[in-house]
Amino acid sequence: MADALKLILQAERELAASFEEVDRIALENQDRVLSAFRKNRICEEHFAERTGYGIDDYGREVIDQVFADVFACEAACVRMQMVSGTHAIACALFGNLRPGDKMVSLTGKPYDTLNKVIGANGYSAGSLSDLAVSYVEIDLTAVDTMTDSQLREAIAQVAPAKLFHIQKSRGYSTKRPTLSNTAIARLSRLVKDIDKEALVFVDNCYGEFVEEAEPVSMGADLMAGSLIKNPGGGLALTGGYVAGRRDLVDNALIRLTAPGIGGHLGVTFNQNRLVLQGLFLAPSVVSGAVKGAMLFAQALAKVGLKVDPAGPARRYDIIQAIEFGKREALIDFCRVLQSYSPVNAHVAPEPSEMPGYEDQVIMAGGSFIEGATIELSADGPLREPFAAYLQGGLSYLHVKTALRGVLSNCKVD
Ligand SMILES: *Cc1c(COP(=O)(O)O)cnc(C)c1O
Image 1 (cartoon, helix red, strand yellow):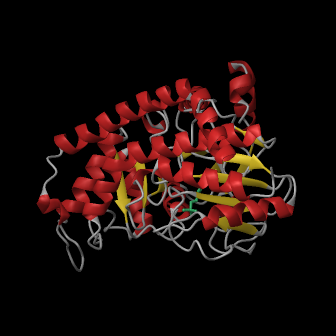
Image 2 (image 1 turned 180 degrees about the vertical axis):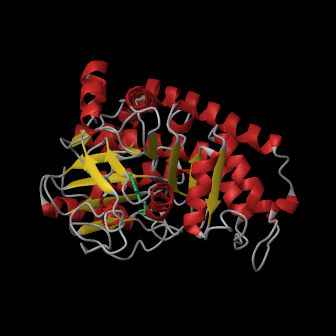
């Protein structure tokens, strides 16, 4: 145990400059969030519960406006009726694509749960492909190593298209990096150069508040994400958001509810205060999670594990990949991590099938909110290279405590 702590404190010292940069970004984000609260004159009345249709729900309306201001975009919608990030993304895609349209993924194979939404791997009832939206993918995740003319050439081969999809976060992939918003801005600009009318959509899951700005303020038209990840700050009980150009957000809302209703109805299930409070804490929580990811990387690299990104590397999402190479080592890591959770520490995770996921997955995460990955958690698909994707942490202290547990108890080192 003494050795584990020594190793952690050493790693922390080595990360001092990186932590300073994380703090600088967090301060800017906190300032932006606070400004939006002040501008929108948030007050007790906005926390009131509404029932039934939720007509003229001031809380819902102000939350939409606060998110739009924080994300520096025309419009945003935040809805408890969006059951997950996948659902928010699906609303954005189905709302803005029509039969005969073409969708292009610029970042290769999308996140596992989107395969059935797109219908990318064969027939999937109700998918975009079932509704005659065609789909093509190219992989430009190496954007930072490519010249403008190389990128232009690659995009020109798949243009024109109605919508270009960019997944910011690496998701469950060891083969691609997470894209910076600068890289997303560059891709957006090149897409528009070639195809002026095309829409650029960003799957922003895990990206919020890691950088100083969000993709829609840097050239993308629309983005979506989950409230039980970064922007919910660990307090939102459920929900998703879509943000960007007003007409495109409206289209997503029409898909969520019905034509003629859009964003005008829908109660918030007495969640307004938690959603706002979670957003208010999000810059702090996300920066703690980023530091925690850096600390895990720096410490586990010292005991010989392959980590990506490296501890001090600049971050664009909260995910830390740790490769175990062996099935048993991955399972052991997840079990130890689970045992250092505030909730369900006494249960041992088992690999299992997950709806929407292709391989068996093992998930560690004894969270206050079920499945919340802004809380400390690790997911690992049971496939080569048996990597765990670690993310979250409501507090840096918890991540540090759990790391000490991992270093002391895992068989890996
Ligand atoms: C988590 C995630 C999703 C899907 O979100 P769920 O809430 O799990 O449905 C989509 N894309 C990326 C990159 C994600 O990380």
